[in-house]
Image (cartoon, rainbow over all chains, first blue to last red; front, side, top):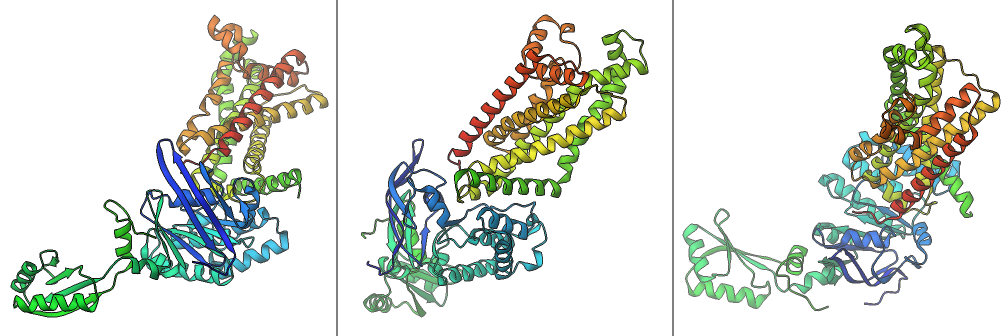
Length: 316
Length: 266
């Protein structure tokens, strides 16, 4: 897939092992500037290690990477000057107030006193933290800590932002709030690489998704492309009673029955011929279903099909 | 900005952060100031009468306590420096476990500034603790006999000692997996002054222990401090004291730098 946008993050054959344990096994990624790229994968897939390598925290064992035009090995300090990182663990100083945390960042970016104060106040306002600006950060709620953490990352206007599981541990309202903030950042032209194990998060935010499993990229594409890769959807039959469910289960031994909901789920694909075939078989065996529901494949199906034990490799 | 001015700017920013943290969490500083004072009172008023008499031959009483006050003050000063350094190990370990270290490491700042900020803050804390202790000691009747030059030398030696112990403790803070370990590792630094000439003369100890006390770093440092207070410091001992400080500072600094550059474990 070609893109007219300049490239912001580019890796080739990135690999890393801790002792005998291979964490990354040849990662090739290309992220266009001004887009959101999601690294999706189960725990231990290598998402955080990828972010740590690209943000110069950890050295790769092999491969090359350029971030914002700078080689991560040869020009680490130029990379650091161009990026902002919000890690999995809140990187705020709990003893300092929100305002002091932001001013500390401003000082470390050498913004000058007046400009630093102005930007700190602007960020407090943007993240709706003015009311707690004078309170020690350790008294903040989880959501407020995340917002402060992100605000600190934005100080100094980074070109590329890494967000490692930005919404883990947040309640649904805070999660949505954070999604809005992330969308707002990209609208300003920032490139974002985020890691997540939540499919809906990747689906909601990302322009492109790389599915990571056991240190390898098992699929990459837009959310729509990935969904297309998993064939078919699910046909759900709703039966009238338990006897009907039993009868239907005998006709479709592969189906997954739900005794409480009186439904039988068939992963037969959701296209017209598949539906027709299901209806034909029902009619031949004189089983009456009250109605039928077709669900198209979600990222859940993609995820389960591509990662973990028994994953199928999808040709790219 | 060149490397040096970047280091100075960022280190002073980090120092401001650490001073602010001390103000926000004053119980640590108060403990570091209060505990040595408590030790001084304990050693002078509980043990001092007898120990002072044993040291000088005067009769047990106010005079022997005054003798012991003069004798023990340098040792408690060093204990104050050691426990302030122990505090550094704790705060470095807290930073490391809280994730803010990782943030600093992904920023375009002078790499040494994070640790330098800790060290400078801790040295200031240490000087506060030693200053308060000296004040209390004078209130109790300690009358140092140092010349202005002697005071300057005292200030330099105590600052250098605090600096050296702090760098060593920064390394302890970085090498520890948890804050608890970081608090326990430097404990021996607080114990070591007991095994020196700080509390009783070395020649009163059994041979093996006396040999150890004679050759461990705290003895020449305490002897030099004691000598500077009375106005007759021995130059050779002072050089050994400064040498020990330089060695401890260098080892602590190089070890800390290596640990700081190491890949984070998570």
